Image (cartoon, each protein chain N blue to C red):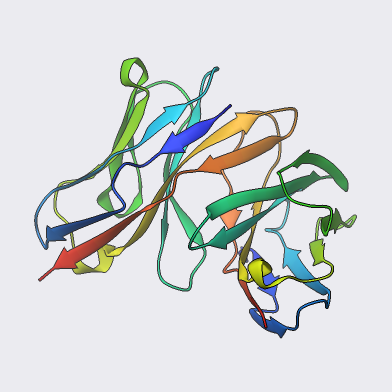
Amino acid sequence: KAGVTQTPRYLIKTRGQQVTLSCSPISGHRSVSWYQQTPGQGLQFLFEYFSETQRNKGNFPGRFSGRQFSNSRSEMNVSTLELGDSALYLCASSWGDRGVYEQYFGPGTRLTVT
Amino acid sequence: AQSVTQPDIHITVSEGASLELRCNYSYGATPYLFWYVQSPGQGLQLLLKYFSGDTLVQGIKGFEAEFKRSQSSFNLRKPSVHWSDAAEYFCAVAADTGGFKTIFGAGTRLFVKA
């Protein structure tokens, strides 16, 4: 079974631009979560989507948004990029059912904002 | 609020020596606990998980962890470390908040001496 895939793997953007990252979960998984990983803040939860609905959200500004499609693929968008948005963005998928919380992570998208 | 503490930022052990990585959590309900490993430039790989039942859980790559409710701990152990175990290790707790989100510790970087 194919794992979680994320595209692109690397991205360089300029301050003020916007970016869209994509995540394809493991087949059959309905929950997709996004995390930001930086050396200073570690792994921080952004949001979780389940069956096209945002179920949970972390403490990030409104510039960070996401969505999930009917095939469970998910995208996250960051508008008006800031230098501090440079990070590894990780996507994780799960069955999403209550009581089943193990997540499987993709390789991440390395975003650099200049 | 849920939190995870990994008191050791980095640990160095000799190849063949035993390993214990510490993890303490704070969560009001029954915790769902995980250990993940991350190699440089990679996503996170699930090593093991604890949901309920036997407090000593076995994982992949020869790792095990023991859940101690009285100490709010979930320490990771391995009897004999291999050079390929050098990586960053994350302890995490899943919080059921109507959806779920995973709270990660800051991570412990493991160095293995030849």
